Structure formats: structure tokens, C-alpha cells
Image (cartoon, rainbow, N blue to C red; front, side, top):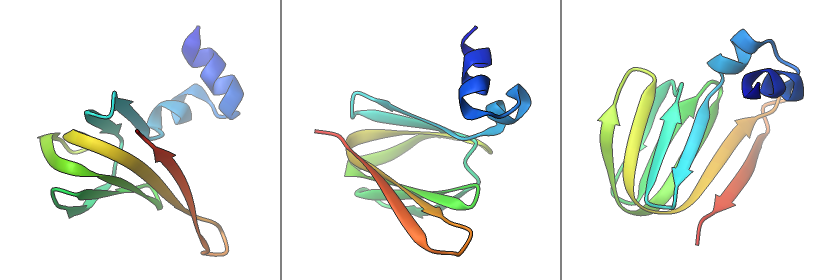
Length: 101
């Protein structure tokens, strides 16, 4: 089963794996984020979400929030890149980037 394999790969119990955030980029035209904590910034060019202790930045054009729930958000527009900014235990900011062409 997929979830069992995911739990094994992440070395987390299944209950914890399901609580983690999930980001799905759909062909660079929409993005769905599960288990976000807070909307930090919203404009037509950039959306920033707090995810646990980290931040997810979505860069694009004509970005719109289509659905906004307490833990899920669906955005559409032309998505150029996503950046995950995560904080290490010594409070240094590190960045992971996913470019969409």
C-alpha cells in the first residue's frame, strides 16, 4: 500500500505522515496545499504560506486563491516557481526551489 511505503520511507508513523503538509503543482496552472498554518502574503505575483515552522512561497502571474479553508488552499494562475524556506535548529534559513517552465 502506498501510505505504508510512504511511512517507511519517511521513517514516521502513518498518523504523523498524514499530518505533514502536501503541495501538489498541477501543470504549472494550479497548486493545492494541504495542512498549511497561515496565509502570510497574497498578491497576483506571490503567495506565501506558513507551513509548520517553514514557509512556502509561490511565484507566478495572475495568481488567485480559488478555495481557502482552515488547512487547505487551492490557487490558480501561471505558476513559475515554488520555494520552500525551512528553518534549521540553529535558526538559519535554508531554501529549496522548484522551477516550473
